[in-house]
Image 1 (cartoon, one colour):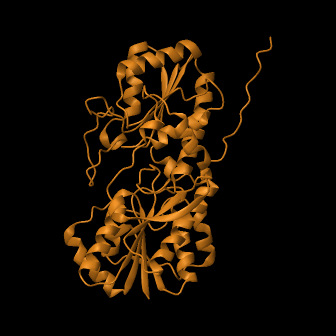
Image 2 (tube, helix red, strand yellow):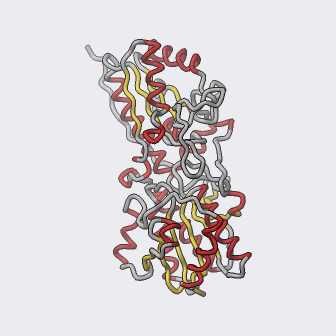
Image 3 (cartoon, helix red, strand yellow):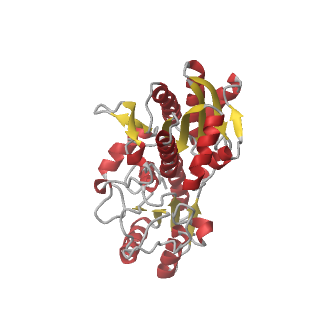
Length: 394
């Protein structure tokens, strides 16, 4: 028995508030948690005593969370220091907090793991559970992360629609470059393959960070598509690298966790540099499209099943902590018949590790996905729209 604390960290997803909703509802319905507090703006907000009473929220607000974008509690990317841990323990004890739930990605799992372990080793009884969240889909131990299906649908729809634009504008712009999020893993770039309905549909080339980017081969493949179709649609992950390990983005800036910063923070981007490479080699005009954080907060494109499983992860976290489990992250499982469920993975196995796409999901040339990826991804998003094309009746 005691109070509980929940926080959201890192970038949001379209369904991160559904996980918060699941925690609030389960905490109210159970007997173990007396009052549920929310940390405003992450763990550093908590250390400053910035808490909100989630148990006192009205039913209408709680019900509306699953349809609300961004992070309702506010977020941060604070790098936890060893000297922070005694202060965190003191604030936990002062507020009689016996359960802590953090919703986030790799670095967040490291935070809850360190806090839970420190308290356990220093005589304070605290049950800590992590709830997975990331559009990158790069957390170990789970079939997929809440937020990935919705972001996958966002990118697939965007490429499907921008591909139609590129096809019809090929006499003006002969290529289009679309950049997705993905520092170390290409799950989101790969998901754009779901946009294809028939042979020749965009995207024609997909490049993921798991394979080195070969400039000569890229130009060969892009020119071949332009010669055959009149245009080429190219998708790149922001983190793709040349064979020597140099980022195609040319970015050297790092965040507080030692991760390379891409986009505006890095001063360049993979998508823009690929655009320059193709334009310089062909003399052709082309478009570039970089959505950056938009797929992380597009509630209008959220997958209903993604919302449901995100809320389920929150509820499962409360169930685990209330039954005495600690030091785990909730996982999503998939059985042989394709049914999804919930499990748990030790935080020590999850923290600060990135799950890349398996080699069998990327083709040998490194410019597309394979049937293995399509089999994995198709059940995660609902069918995309069917568009018509005019018949060539003269």
